[in-house]
Length: 161
Image (cartoon, rainbow, N blue to C red):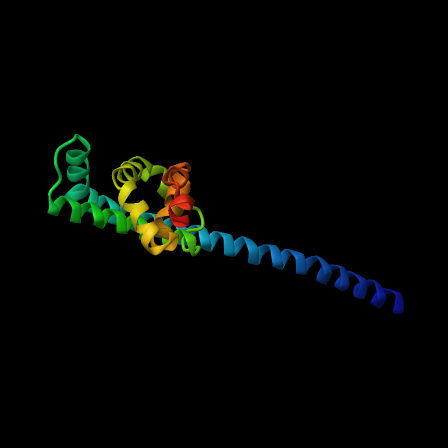
């Protein structure tokens, strides 16, 4: 009888030993699935926010000033709004609120890069006055959509003066 009890104890110990890694894996898989769900929700919200502003203002103004037309004060305010939106997006990415930013950045790369080109001088000036963190979120986005952007500003040389 003692040997049957010992066998059951061994089987119970083995089951417990196997159960712990399985439980840890299930926790990990559940966490990843929850993160993916949150990322999808954030991506959809960002997409809706961008699309609303893009369709109502940003696209028209960016095309108009990109074609060489003179921009007026209202155009500059609208484009500065877009610049701030991009900075906000980068801040979300930088602080881990969007673990997989690739989908969002891939779909928005073209208009964001146009905006960065348009405001290259403004961004460099702001960084020279206030430091790189002033547009920290924007640089986070640029690293994903336009990797050479920050180097093209020559920020180190400007801050040395």
